[in-house]
Image 1 (tube, one colour):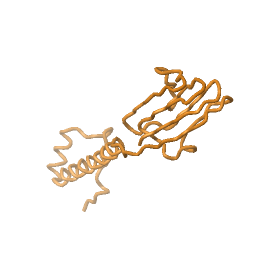
Image 2: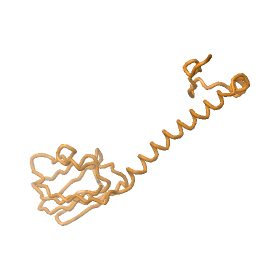
Image 3: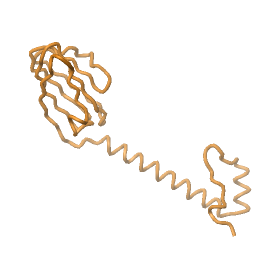
Image 4: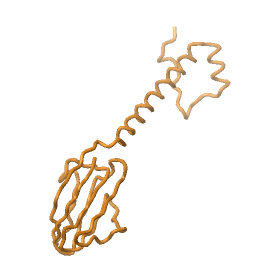
Length: 150
């Protein structure tokens, strides 16, 4: 008697032709049922992945207000070590001055509003929790308000 372990494993790479599948179904009708069960199992896994992705796209509705002092000697790097609530989906940055402020999100410098002068603000919305690293740099020392959203 054949068991499930005796059946060939069907993958995309070694997928049998339609003729071969037809022959297997005639010889062993339960093979079609097993193929259908495998397809349903694969679809369930894909739906689970889709659900996880969809859940990550829904905002939590939390805002995280922070204030930082950016030193003149080096850039201030905000990552999950300094800010455990990362990743964020959007960010608002306000330069309280007195010097110009440059903002880098993840690995990309924000040049649309560079530099931020005293009193200026900028907002970036990724629509998904993708902001995992923020680098703030200033020519002099600068006070910064940062508000992230999850």
